[in-house]
Image 1 (tube, each protein chain N blue to C red):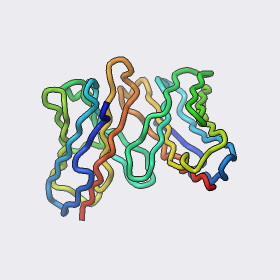
Image 2 (cartoon, helix red, strand yellow; image 1 turned 120 degrees about the vertical axis):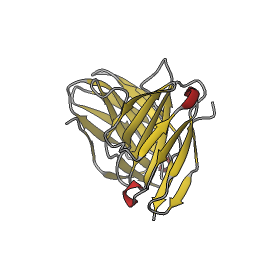
Image 3 (cartoon, rainbow over the protein chains, first blue to last red; image 1 turned 90 degrees about the horizontal axis):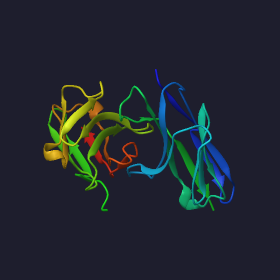
Image 4 (cartoon, rainbow over the protein chains, first blue to last red; image 1 turned 30 degrees about the vertical axis):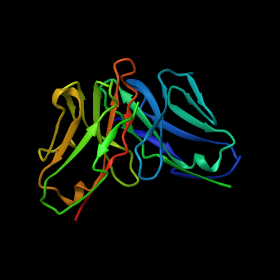
Length: 111
Length: 114
């Protein structure tokens, strides 16, 4: 069965302490990998789409990369306002338009 | 661009009652999706519309659940004979023709079944 696994489940960083979040996925039939940010009690906010290995996207302090087996969301010099849950989702060729989400990484950035 | 809107934002109902949620997608988006999210989990796909046609349904969508999108604009999701296990956040998302796979989510409707 297709699976999306995110690690770590939770991450606590000091302001300015860079780190990376991981998303691993079942390799066969990948048709796109998506990163979302979700604040408590709100809907997910779209961040990035990646389609092929080697692709990279950047937005402010966030950079998403994709290999053949996993994706990383790199957070450079995070600020407290970056605290949120970061969700990874994958679209497979046999899943139509449905996105398969991981459980997310809960990030807390302390001043 | 006012974003995806959902109403109500919160709904508390007693077990066995029927509930209906509404989603208004971004105006130029022709694709609309419903997901369900429980605490500590990622969203789970329920169903997908392209214009007014319902093209995909998850096996999670039991016969107590029905969704419509008349005229290809807003959508409604109805749950009949609610059960405590239906308590969750119900999320709606939409996408457009050009970037069909980039789904933009609304704020969700939090359902509590007592």
